[in-house]
Length: 357
Image (tube, rainbow, N blue to C red; front, side, top):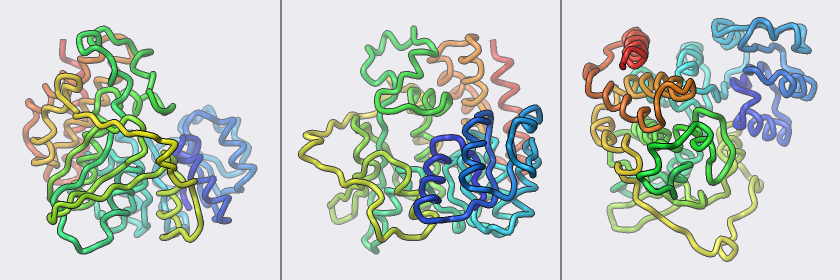
């Protein structure tokens, strides 16, 4: 496989599955964690390695190492592997997805932004989702029963238990205190604002087609997806929060052996569900309109990434992230007509968010 984002949590789990089932690694693409990358190189002996920064090349223990976004695309093109795991973060993962599809490769996709910003121009028939929520929906959707609604679950993020009036005082440090697990900075902030769940709903819309999609909070992160059928019944996908299960299915098409320990409901004891409200998560107020106009996801993603940068820099408050995204969504109402429009609109929205007072 070609593994994009090898040193992140999804990349580490993908390599764990590769080791367990003796799968070969063609290319490793990593960011700034060169120490972990060198350990991965020693263990998996990839043919080529790509890092983000040219200055890191000298520190990488491999004879065929390159740097920069363009070399990622080149690595995808020249590789004889027909399978790409895209675990890159943010808009940066979009071009590699397009390149992989252009080269006729299959994609195990964790980079939800690829569909959020350009779902209208992406062939989803060659994409296998490895986010636990979308894997759960796929896992449940293996029958011909008519579906009424698809639901995914959210943890609620860092501020799910805060008094609502206190959230306006939240700092970056506060936003990064996820109640259930440790993740990267951006996705943890997106979890706190509920933007991550908005993106996952939009991704589900592109993956599974038109229909009704919604999300609810399940505080223990045991249930990942539910499907309501037209006959009035509901099924749920329960599993421990471990990416190795969806990755195993993506890489091998099936799993005939146990990947995770089963959920022991007696030990779980009870489950708690909560409604996602716009009072606590202001971004939720544009959910319906975005799902009805999914091609405008590029606006939301660009505004969110730009606003998060400002928040991390200490220039705006946490709640200002959602305010700026909503503002941009109301301002940029046109949809991209081609892939080039996606990149143009992405740049325009980022400049707009930066220029707001």
